[in-house]
Image (cartoon, rainbow, N blue to C red; front, side, top):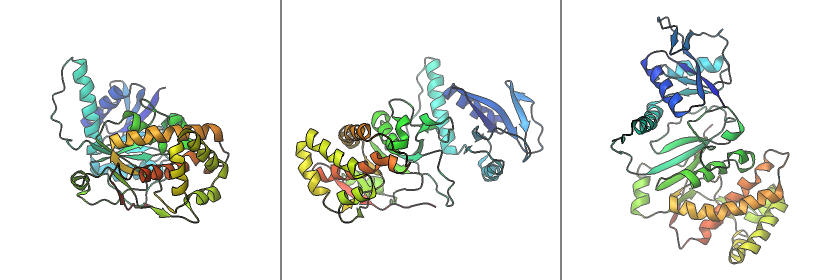
Length: 350
């Protein structure tokens, strides 16, 4: 499916960006290069029109806009374009530029039947993926991504709008189930496609509060898993879920566990009669641990979703995600002797 975009900028930086995007995403078509200053520019770039724009210019508001200018102009341009009704504005930061360049060069060298002889400076093999959605509202607080973090658009199969370079509908995926599985479509994507030694999942507004030495601590202390600080609920994990959501989903899940994992059922029943679980489906863990978790977790969630079907209430329709929070916590409680686990606080950005 063809996806049209705009690029702000008409000089070398913007033209290079256009080359990267068209090569990496064959479905992308650049509708126009845009500029809003008084500089003289070419009328077109390789057949793509170069247009001057201001607040009265009629642009297709659903088409993403990439800012291919110096970063010093990004704030002003973003504000201006949002005021014009543009829904998706993507500033090309140095980090994004580096990512696009590296991926472009991998393809370029491959087409030349040559090896891409680049020194790998990312020795940590770590990536914390941040789930984002087209329904996210703009943040009031500034948040800068660390070198370990990368945004992934969830539910990308359900919309033509693109807000991230990485989407959960690439490779082996369940993106079209996002309305029920929410951030778990990112978890599934990480399980099936990520190759880092350590992986994580955070949310657009929720991030772990980690010290500068968290990674070295994870390595030296041989930590396998970081989970959110537990939430205390009453009267118990099980009853709290049954009171807040459809009790039939919980009962079916427990019956299924009893049938398929009889050894787990007794332990799960006892654990869910306690009060602490880690919310939000957030984590940082070694990929081998995540593989173990997901191989156990997703078959349960899929059968629960198949049995429960969809709900008219959008919030309650996300019951696979709510079940997952409890199941994930139980998985690590059950495996306390196998994996070294620690907790970390999280923030919430307005």
